[in-house]
Amino acid sequence: MASIEVRNLSMHFSKFIAVDDVSFKVEDGEFVTLLGPSGCGKTTLLNLLSGFLTPTSGQIVLDEVDITRVPPELRDTAMCFQSYALFPHLSVQENLSFGLRQQGVPAAARLDRIAKVTDQLDLKANLQKLPNQLSGGQQQRVALGRALAVRPGVILFDEPLSNLDAKLRESVRYEIRSIQKQYGLTAIYVTHDQAEALAMSDRVFVMNGGRVEQVGSPETIYHQPATSFVADFIGAANILEAEVQSQSGDRQWQIETPIGCLTVDASDPPAANRLRVCWRPEHGIEGGASVNALSAKVHHRSFQGNFTDLTLDLDGTSQRLQVPNSTVMDGDGITFSIPPHTLHFLEPIQ
Amino acid sequence: MTLGRWLQVILLLIPGIGLVVFFMGAVVYIAIAQSFGLYNLAGESGFSFEFWTDVTERKVYWRSIRYSLYIGLISAFVSVALAYPLALWLRKPFPGSFTVSAILKAPLLVHGLVAAFLFINVIAYHGLFNQLMQGLGIWDEPRRLQNDRHAFGVLILQAWKNMPFALLLLTGAVQAISDDVLNAARDMGAGAFARFRRIIAPLSVSAMQAALVIIFINALADFTFQTIVGPTNRQSLAQYMVFFRDSGRWHEAAVVGVTLMGLSIVGAVLLSLLTHMVFGKRRAR
Image (tube, rainbow over all chains, first blue to last red; front, side, top):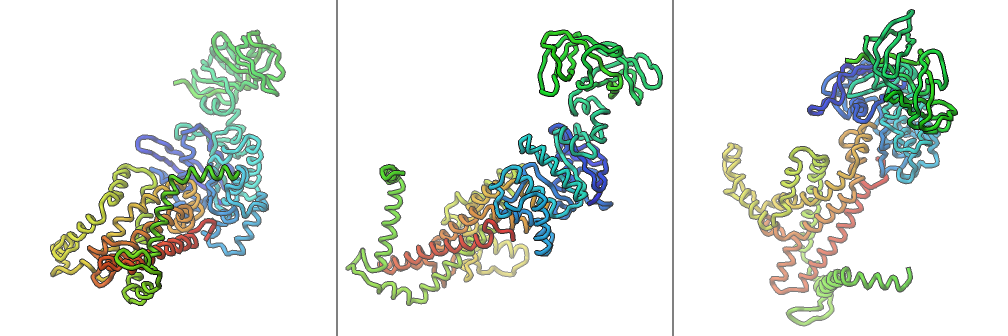
């Protein structure tokens, strides 16, 4: 186990800036997720951490040792690849022992470690098989086992579940997290799947355009997004432009928005007079309420099982509302309210 | 499949593969038969071991075998050894890689005889290389480089001519290895040599075998390079065969020819086995 720190890291490909002055520290035993859309720089950042790329500027420090220019084969990191990257000509056992042989681990210790990993990952029955004789989930386990066997200081995951079906993804996600906790591994996990990030991480780093847009616990990221990008990327969000009209008490503000005048109950004051606000569709309440009560027309209704997703038209502004057991249909009128404490101030409007 | 279906398949194959097999078989049969005294083109025919006995008792025959094996094996190994790093270098496209690749493959388009004469211009007593070395003040006087006794000239020409062919085969094979697999090996602590030994070579072993075998067979039967730049006190098997044929001794020439075919087969099998043993699949070490 180890801590890893990134200081002002940048990576330029000709004129394209893939990673732009990124700094953060991942503590010993922490599970951190780099979350962002395709092309935001998260995989480039992971490749910089693993050593497959050399940064244009900045530093990578592993346990207080600068490893910025250290080649991957000499770094105390191990990567789980999106494609699994198993050695196709080697059996599962040979794949698992590959890193240990490189480390010069004696045969007895090697067998012991492989036995532990295969027990943990339920791979005993497949040890003599070649990778192409395994299912996707089994290949994923072998890739994880290969990385675990070398006992790296930091384990890096590059969208390891993206090739699995939804059901398997959920179970492997749980497995990865429990193994990480059990081994006390420092893990950095790259994904564009926000559900994966929220479910697995101690902290989430939301990336956009090569920069880290917000860092925080999954709860913070979801409930207190710093920007409209984070609010929109994590879950569903209704984002409105707003102007602060007045303040009442310590934490209540009246704001003017395209859907009407709303009251916001927030612990942090707004960053500017004109700014964006957001609310989550599931926080709206169908029916009347005295504060933030609104009337709208149902533009589209979509039944989702445990809730109904409604797209509403509020005088030309579209908003989403997710409510349980709604009986309204397309074209019906609806009244709903937004609890003031669920409205959240975002960045100022430039 | 039913018998009728098999028959249909065989009949369909006969016009293509059948002709190839027939003509190849006819050549092999004639060569073997001639080596035992049959099909004499200039005199009486009759089955006999006499020609095998006569040729195999000659020292020059065994020296030719040793020399041809030396040329065949060294040429094959050197060509493949030179082609591998180039194939790995050209694995991923980069600015100018297409041009570099085309230039490296240019020897495939140059006839061996032309290449040999061009080489003579370079290594002749008054050739370019001698002039260069004297011009640089490294040598005081020209040195004899042509027809050297270790056949370095032949080996250089063989490697020059055959390396592009090995490169052609190996480039395709190494390009098929994914970046992630190579990165995974690095990530697991494998340096450049370990990556080659444990990942690249086993995953491209088929192309390596094909290159080694084809170059070996080609160089084993070399006549052109040997005649022009080879040592004067050695004869390759092809040269020895031509020596017999020129004096109308077809049966002895056939003995050498059959030896050449036998060595090609045995050499090809041994090279394939060797590469498989060293780099074969499912080997972790």
